[in-house]
Length: 135
Image (cartoon, rainbow, N blue to C red; front, side, top):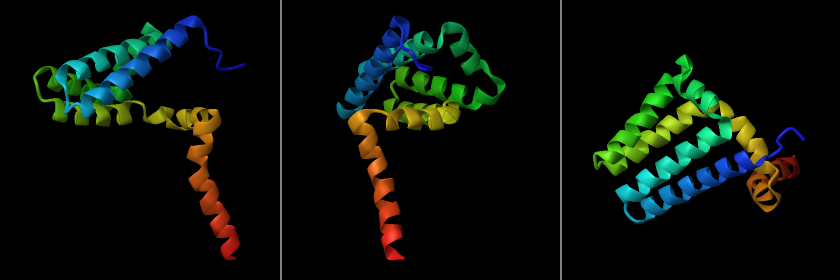
């Protein structure tokens, strides 16, 4: 099995999940600065544990990823200096730029989740069915 989850990767995924949860909760609670900071700490620690410390450092310091790394870290800085809305927007942009190469892999992974994958694939299946019936 190519994507075997050992205990370390499970902890990393759990921390990433907590980071996303706390960030979402912070946005719902009108950009609570403390929850956003906690979400960022959990998320960064989870990525570091999931990928490994060396791979995470290489990801953030890679010459092609400077734009995304700088945007993400600048977003964290904005959150800490009490500009949470600007900070979260800059962070989201940084995540898309930094992890843009991972989206095809993430898409395949999400399609394999039993119920969630079907929900994600359903609009594409419906469009293909409508195209076929119109001929």
